[in-house]
Image 1 (tube, rainbow, N blue to C red):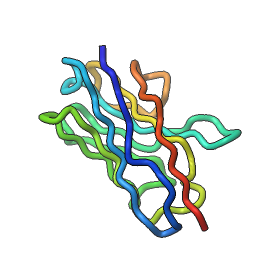
Image 2: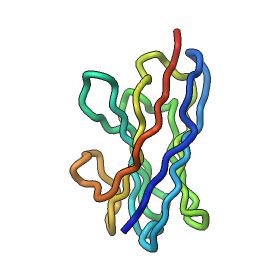
Image 3: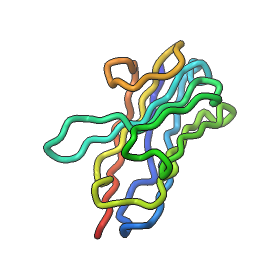
Image 4: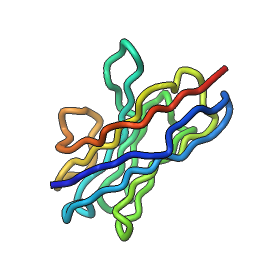
Length: 124
């Protein structure tokens, strides 16, 4: 079992930055790939970025590549999403997710556990 709690969302102006934190509880965190997804009103949940259990591999959606960075600290059972150069189209609820015993994944169905989400709103 892995319990996930996101924090760090809020309201920011376009061009600004936010760092989201996902705190995990559970013995299997350090062996789990982690992902970030987002869902805007009226849209399907979409992939943002993923990081392998070791932290050596990361992959991003084209829409955030070069602006967002996923990192993790296994000693703290925490994964981060650093978001820079934010745009109004980044407005969404952001979710972290855990994928047990695997490398990385870009699809929501590949993940086993989900947090409750944190709202990010980018004003123009």
